[in-house]
Length: 241
Image 1 (cartoon, rainbow, N blue to C red):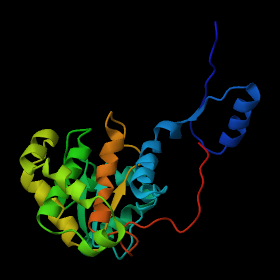
Image 2 (image 1 turned 90 degrees about the vertical axis):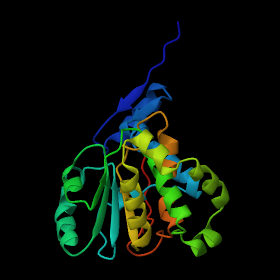
Image 3 (image 1 turned 45 degrees about the vertical axis):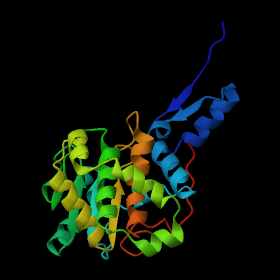
């Protein structure tokens, strides 16, 4: 009877290259890490949607750019995940930062948000498409950016029409009025940025497509590669997984 040996390593990341070599020396091709089921889906989603591995948005944008006027924290208890950034958010909020938190839990960051969308777990994709529908119907998208840098806008428009706010409210449990308010605040307050945790939007059966819907928001509003928006890292980074 054939047997399969799988090598699996969790944190910390430092010994992984040596563990990888051990796996190959043993003769097994089955080398896995916690990253295999952490943010790999997000990385895949961004590569499919943007044509490159643009995934480090989600992990580098927890820090607050002073130029950002509106920020969405999507599925992350920021104080717990990145406590070293917490005070900057407290000060920025006092100075007028608009804050939208999307999270089933009432986290510390949610308590200071202008809008907290407390959705049912796993319904992030429907919520994102509802927000997209509000932005498109209200003509709040960045027409110049879309025409110059994107393809498939008409297809997205058709898909988003299938998610009117009354339907999204039934799916997510979030009142339609709050979804509309959040969509308008994000689209009208520029520059705006979204921060995602490494895995909360993707650890569901439909997680990959959930995340693809979410990451269309910066492109739809032209909040890409501008100061205060979502920007690619300014350094080369390679992670062995």
